[in-house]
Length: 267
Ligand SMILES: [Zn+2]
Image (tube, rainbow, N blue to C red; front, side):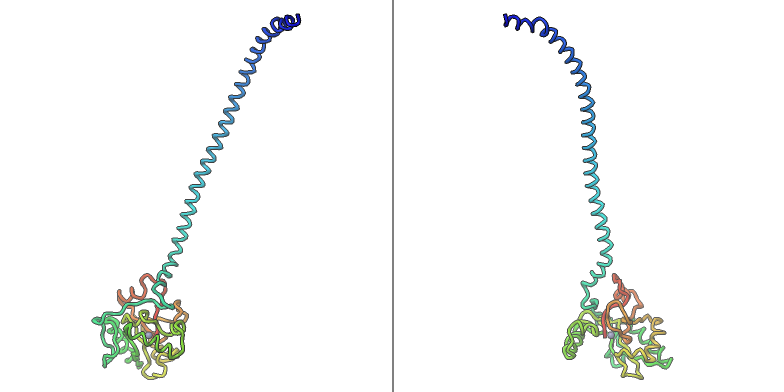
């Protein structure tokens, strides 16, 4: 009985209708849930896609941004090399003195009667013209030193430095190391005042008539002072040391690829 009744209940009432109703109910809810799920899926998918897109675009931007940074760094580095170029020049520099090649023997001309002092041809001719012009103005320009070989420079730097108890750095403020003297080029000349030889190679040469005449006229003969006061090379003031810059080779020798106006070398 119980079983039958029990079993009947389901059969009679609920089960059948129960099945039907639930189906209908399920259908509605199912479709409803499907309909709800689809928007959710769309929303979630859209969000996911959006997130992915932003992640990707962010990544792309990130990838791009570093490139820009990298570019800008090289750019700034590129602008730095300009200053670096002068340091590049510094690779040819010792203690503030730039490297110079020796003038070929065949290009040298004597500027003194005894032939002891020589300069490169173009410079020698202009120097002699300058001496004559000065003389006609009552000023005696006396050449003290012109072309000097690298070998000539060695004792001037090392031996004299040792005699004077100077370190290379101390010596370099007064004299160029071998291979780094403007005198190697044949374009440089140390000039004295023939009437006041005591001022030879001395800073107070600047008080002589010779120096004053040079200051006023040397450029007419394409000569300039290499080491004025406060020169960027840090070489000591040398009012007696002048260099020829009147042709292409001399100009390039002293100025090409160099930011420094004054060049190296000393007495
Ligand atoms: Zn000199």
